[in-house]
Every structure is written in C-alpha cells, then in structure tokens.
Length: 361
Image 1 (cartoon, rainbow, N blue to C red):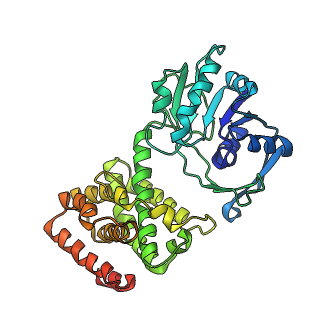
Image 2 (cartoon, one colour):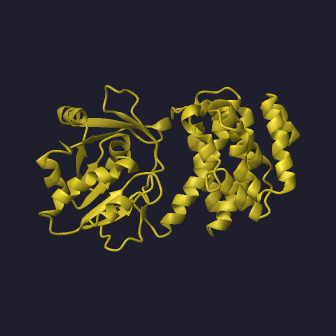
Image 3 (spheres, rainbow, N blue to C red):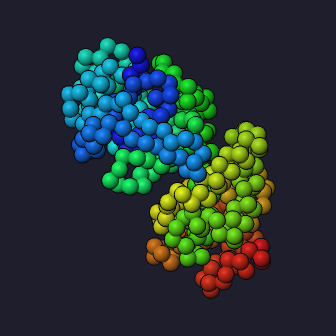
C-alpha cells in the first residue's frame, strides 16, 4: 500500500492534489495547523468535489486520515509516507522545517517532498535546511473554491495534471497525473508571463470600465476584443523565447483566457490589479513580455494600452507618482512608442471611453 501525506488541507490540497493521489491508489493523510478543520474532516469523514461547468462527474473523497500538525500522529504519518505534498503557500514552507526535523529522527530513507505552491524556487527554504529529503516542486494551474464556508465540499477546475520538476536528483516518486517536466523552470516562466499578462488586460481595463467582478470584466466585449488582439502576439513571443511551437503556446494562452472568462470562478478586479507599480517593474509581468516583443520586432500597440491602463490605476487608485511608474518603460521603448504612451495617458486621464480608444488603435 502506498502512503501519501498532504500538508495543508485547504482548497488546493483537498480539491486538486487529493484526487490525483487517490487515482494512483495512495492512501491519503491530511495534516494542517487548523485544528478546527482537522476536527471537521474527522467528524464528517468525507467531502465532495464538484467541477466548474459540470465538465466531470462530482466525486467523493473519503477513507482518509487527518491530523493536526502539532500531533505525534502527524510525525508518524510523514515518517511512513512514500510521498509528501505541501500546499501551505510558499511563505509558510519554512514553518514546516521543525516538523520535518522531528520526522528525520527515526526515518530511514530520504523524504520525497513535492512543494505544490505557486511561485519561483519555492523550495529554497527547505533545501537550505539540508533536510534528509529529495525536494522538488509542482506547478498549480487549477483554481479550487469553497463555496460554502460551513461545508467541506469544494468547486474545482477540471485540470488533469500537476507537472513536477524532474531535474531533482534522488526523485523516486511516480504518480500518473504528476508528469515529470524536464523544462520546469521554463514552464514556470511561461505561466508567469502568459497568465499574468493576460490577467493584467482584464484587471486594468476592467477597472477602467468600472467592473468589480473579474469574470464579468473578462467577458466584456471591448476587453475580449483586446484579449484577442494580444493573444497571437504574446503567444509568438513566448514560443520564440522558450523554443516551443507557436501552436503549443497558443493553446497554453487560450487555457489562461478560458480560465479568466469562466464566471463560475469568483474573483475581484481589486485582488488582481493591486500593487500596480510593482507589476510595472522592469522584470515583471507587463514589461518583460513587452521587451521580448520589441526584441522580436513585434507590434506592441495593444500591449502599450495595457501598460498605460496599469499606470493610470497606479496613479488614480494607489496614489503613485506618474514618473515613478513610467521610468522602467522608457528604458527600452522607441521614441515613437513613448509618444504613443503619452498620447494614451492623455486619453485615460480625460476618461475617454475604451471603445473609442480601441477604434483609434
């Protein structure tokens, strides 16, 4: 019998990771610091996962164990686990080091740890701790929601796979729906640039048009038009940089768009638009794809529109100085591009309609 431990019994851990492991006939133990959640799991002994758009049958997860992270049972479960998946947010991974130290005392083989957190090099704190472990990372493309806070039941995207970094030495775990990704770092960067740039279109144009709900903004006719204009450009650019086919990257970009336009996934403009100045940084989600595009002599007309919308948000909503959010753009843009941006800024500042701006581009 194969044993799996999921540290973090929240939405991703229970809704996305657990079914993947269950499909591979692992017995599952949840570990979490939230003792009320653990108590609820032990009392109810099961929960259901429903899928957006009914794209898959509702499934029941049961026959699991659940322990508080401070318990001796948690230590014992990890000690006997064939695979340990974390789903605690990358900023909390370091908090697990004392728990893993306790496990090491009597565990004879290296732990097989998969950090299922979004981010770049999220495993660094665990690696730096020099644990007796093979530590790799997974990348999450799946959104999971808990529609009713009084229920354990979840609502989840029907995403089949959780790719993991195959470059780590000593990795022995094999799970069918956790494919080994040889170019994991590239996949992370492709996700950051694709998903985050496309998200910026919805966030900043959605704010400008007065939307609060993200999915509704993504389906606005003007915003959907801009998405379609940018989709082939960003797909060609990223395909070139990461040496993959345009068809593969175009499908990757479309998956991001489908996700954002799914109104069952409840999200807000504010959550996605905040910290606009940071997101306009030289190596961030907006300027990096723009810089790649200019290096490839691509037309960045529509990308400039998004950059200006983000600048306007930073000034109007976050009280940033215009020059401070403008400075990184000026480094790599041509004089014509800078003039275009100034003209667009005037239109945003005068509250010209997005429809009219689109017609002029």
